[in-house]
Image 1 (tube, rainbow, N blue to C red):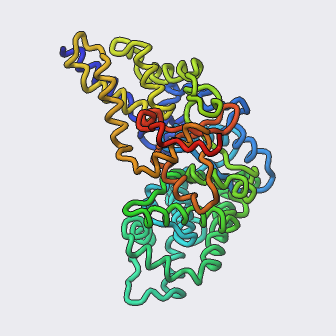
Image 2: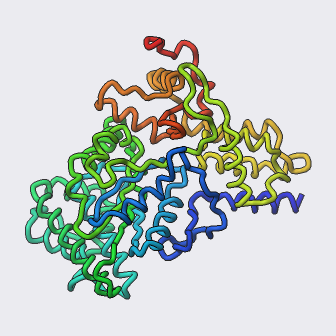
Image 3: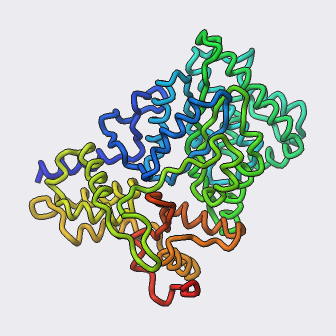
Length: 454
């Protein structure tokens, strides 16, 4: 039993989704995995590689631009962004990476003012870290913002944090301060945007001077914004979703900077606006990282998707890279079952295998059985339960038509909530299509289905 327990523990710890693959970019993300763990081509959609396409757009464009990149948590997005960083560096770019969960509270509404402050504050901090604490000009960006707020913005009796770093922490950790700042800077958005643009241009000149390359392309990757979600009642949740739409749709011009290319991750529900939204950004599109293609292309109306051997093989390869001896615990059909149950969501796939690992020392010969797989699936399924009756009807319609079918953009918060909670998953093999998370299919009943489009 001792060997089984130790090996099961090793498998469990090999499946840490919070450790992306670094692609030799350890300086961008600490505690990452080496490139040997990567499986190529897992997100190919028949139309090319979205990461390579984005790298080419940045490389070929003479002018700097703002780009949008999207994918649900669990699709391997951070790993793909680090692969993008590697490709850009190989093309001669200076690349910076900022995980915005370190700078933003991603459970409250955004406004363009605090988003700009957080993004440029992160950029300023990354420059100091890379260039031995030197900053463009005489002060970091956040110190400049603090001075501006103190002189130009009335905050009543509220005392500003003592320094730039403290200001950043207050924006992230003090929702009351953030709301106050949002309210009192609404009349100063143009000034804050100009200050951000001025700093970005000054930073690019500084970096080019430090690197002794006047034509150097500078790229900032802004990660984790796709995690933006509300908590609390439905009104609060919808307000957060709408705020993301406003920032990236209404304020696209304020998110572009002379000399600095920026790749923003955006919540996947904004793909519903892709036709209009992508047109405001470089590349003319939203670069989307879909769920793994464990299913074949979009099924016909009323049909469930068929398993894809190519996708299942990729899922096996991903596990094999992490732990070569997995077949001592799981048969291939059992692993394929979990891959299909995950819907191609790598995070859920790993979560279920981890649940199996916890049971292995107590099973005959340390091998998984059907009840253990049932329990692993239940553990992930229960995170999505209970489901409101109205949502069950919506999900039944998606399972039938493989399309979310929003009547208008007023339904965007509903679409956002279902996609963000992974009640439905987005695929892009052959075309964009959607399906209900496989673990929820048994919750759909014939009475839930709307046949009005039959």
